[in-house]
Image (tube, rainbow, N blue to C red; front, side, top):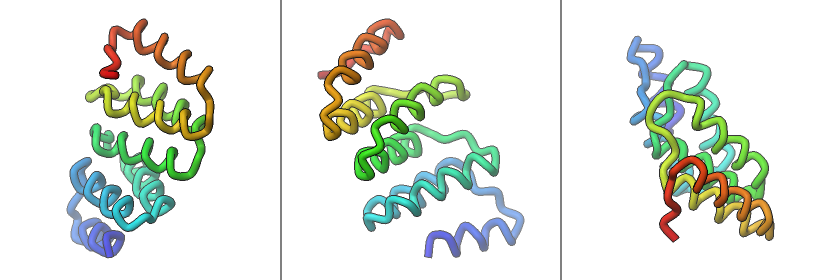
Length: 124
């Protein structure tokens, strides 16, 4: 259903912004449609739409659910290269949870050290 509405918007000449994609991705997450959520993220990138924090958090949640902690790390590091907003504590916590689920405690410690170096304060 969400794909249909975004398609109608595109067909009508209306450009979907980050809020539209964030809602689409969140809807997919609530319906446990992990791959569909990721496909909206890919489409957003192809459209040249800069993801907001909700979109970034959705991608990291999908990484956790699919047990792909390496992809979560790559995504988090690439999120710093985009325009605003940079990843926040929710993004860092989602990445840490993803790695913890995979029992990657050494990678968690490395990420926490990197957070400290980036002057981001972990909230836990």
